[in-house]
Amino acid sequence: MTGDISAVTLDSGKTPQQLCADRSKRLLDALQLKQPDRIPIHLSLGNMVAELEGATRQELFENPDRAQAAMVKTALQFQPDALSGPWGSPELSRTLGDQSTKWPGYGLGPNGSFQFVESEYMKAEDYDDFLEDPADWGIRVFLPRVFSELNGLSLLPPLGLSTFGYYGMLNVGIFNHPEVEKALRALAKASQLQAESMPRQRATMERLVALGFPPMPFFGTLLEAPFDFMSDTLRGMKGIFLDMRRCPDKLLAAQEKVARFQLQHAIVSSRPLVFAGNIACATFPLHRGSDGFMSLQQFERFYWPQLKSLFLKLIDHGITIFVFYEGIWDKRLKYLAELPKGKTVGWFQSSDIFKVKEVLGDTMCILGGMPVSMLSGGTVEQVRERTKKVCQIVGKGGGFIMTTGTGEMEGCKPELVKAWVDATKEFGMY
Image: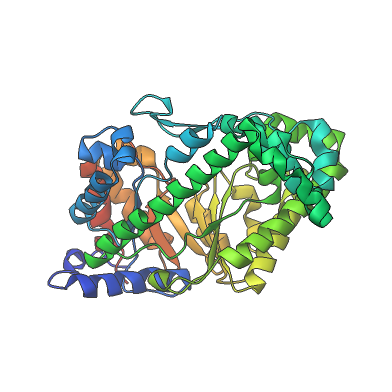
């Protein structure tokens, strides 16, 4: 690695088309464990976009045109290899009466940060019904519990009656019930909102591409570890840890079911995208497999075998696995080394990034390296020193993308972010 300051001007004089091609190749080379011309840097800005724009988070969610302009302005200001902004939208939650999330302007003030409201939306006594038919239980029991506008779905007859042909169709009169009709209208409105948001997202992406900033090629169909699936939106942390002791066999059986239908979903929805390097990708945010949540013995029984099996099946279908390893995974790294070389990408939040490189440098492309806390409370000298060390050690030989440890940079100081980007270009040259 070099510290030649001329590296900062590597992009000078190039057209947006040339910059986009160079940056895209840089990212794809890192993904494939190759050594690019320099270490690519990704800014996962999140709500920092609103801070830079001088707008509330609610205002940007409600004004897509202004949000797009703010993203463009931010990209031109910092000149990263790729960037991403705020995730999601409160509109679906508002439309469906979602009780499991809070957003700026929906359950929170205009500058609130997205929150997931954990609860036991699935009761321990629901396991048998879930295992019997998760789709029926999900539509007629779970959705009405979580979304107030979907209460009417609880009035539907068992979904299995749909296989009763003409005789099953005698039940369609229930759709005229006011509560059922209300639920169906809410779903139709939510579907329309999704359909309207997709062209806006594509327009923002195309605008950034036209200016020389390619999309990250690693984000794809959202899936979860089977254990996290059962924990996050169904049993909650308290419930799932009780289940490991009180009904472990039912928990393991439920994980088999959710892994199976997640695999089916990913095979259909994870399509190679031309604008993202022709890579079919599935994205896994991992929540409760980290060092602080369960013992290695529990990890080896309830978490890793199911997750690894799902990973391998997805890889067999040509799908690249992008994983956010939330928390600390220092004691789990040897398990991750079992994964096929170059088939997964690992974004590490708080793990020892130097240990990650030592154990997994030949196994997967690594993302991370910069603590958000340093970009919000550090100094330019500290940022440059940290960046140089990460570039020299973690960036050695390629297969590394510089980014923050989390997908949210709210509270980061612009001058420190600029120093970080410039230092990555300076010290990240190969």
